[in-house]
Length: 388
Image (cartoon, rainbow, N blue to C red; front, side, top):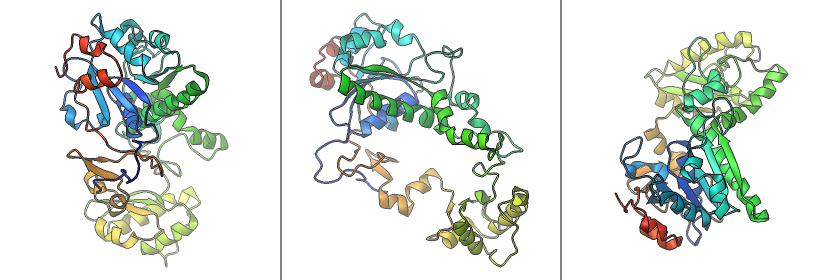
């Protein structure tokens, strides 16, 4: 694990988004992660926190999704609060919010109000169901969004329930990454035309978009609309996970013929008369063979067998184990910053690398600094004092 994974000598810029000002209206989940991504890439992200405890509780000093940001406290329900946020929006290029549809408008900080003071503003909206549609006003979470889009139905064994991919697939892949992509694309347009726009990033849209390849395979007839029956969903015996003798797991991805040949050889089945893997009717027999072989040794033993080969076989590591893996430590994929082990900024840039410049922002800790740097004295007049 590296302590300085992305900060290259001789580079003065904070990252490719150095100089971009972003206002984040505090929320939970995908909105903060998208804003963290922008902050990791060098943007000056000011998070507008509300007075009082966090809705999820917990100590904010450990909330890695708030690293590289500065925080101010603003009570949007006060008389001065909405005007203070609009003053920040007037000096920003991007604003990100994750309220239910209509809430920002009721608070006086919706797109119309903020773009009235800054016509070039990119206004990013992060929701689960989107800004319109029958479900738009309803509450929801990652599990419901990926269930509705069909994505959840694809994950798991054919004879078992769908398996939850924590909240990576909906909140972060279908939500955060699409919001970040959307606001940056809109920023290019705003800089070229002087006109901002609203980016409606709905998790249901992003999660559905992620399944694009499978819709093509469905149309072609090469994908079954059911989990655990296909090439990439665990149905294929040479693309799946196998338990080892000590209760560990090995992940196999030997799809191409040349990699499959290395895999079966190292597994000890090279001399066997194996059934044709191209025929799905042979998959149960192959799976049984592979299962029995992997159960003959522990995870570390199998890791040593496959390490450094093109068999496309890897041990299934825990988070703690991943942070110590030689390849990831060699790349600095994980780093230790401000006492917390965490993923380093991604992706990598040859000339303007992202860095971890600031620890997770404690709500309200940067109010005086932001008031000065952004020229928003209204922050100091808000009834919510710094640090309360």
